[in-house]
Length: 251
Image: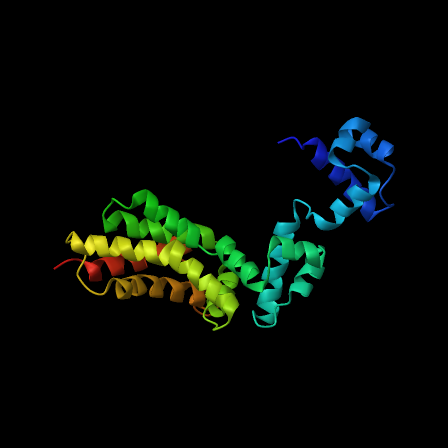
């Protein structure tokens, strides 16, 4: 997608800021391929442009901040995770970081939303919610496996941190309940009422489904290193789902 005139102006100005300083507006208009009048429609003066450069996050700032936060979370843990350290590592100003994420709870919530399988799981339930468990439950595990491929170390960090009693972790738990836990629990209850699954407390049934999958993801690297375990993650999760379906079959 082509950049707008405003985006081209800001992009070129940022390049100069990182090297030799912002040029005159005439030179900037020429380099951005816009007229001086067009430039002035977006920025009344050079000072206006400089203020915008200071307060408007660049397009890649969000991704860089999340990547930096992931690295620091694995190193320092949630309690010691510092917004200042994230800003420094991501190469964004502290003000811009807070414009993207108003505080550490918002940042951690976005980490969980971006890197966990919560949204794919919720989307799968919405898409297949009228199908039987033999279709839906393997699809949930498959969606989780696709999202988690290559991210198991990160997932272990997130799982550990989300259980913390801190406000940051509480916002992530609320997201998990809203996005995945509640929809899956409602689906399981519906299948129990339809006679397709054995009756029990739906939340316990969901825990019985999720628990072995999480345990496998947490222990997978140890199994690979110490026991030579080589089964693809998608296959392993599918077999665990088969065990759950057998145990939850209506009598």
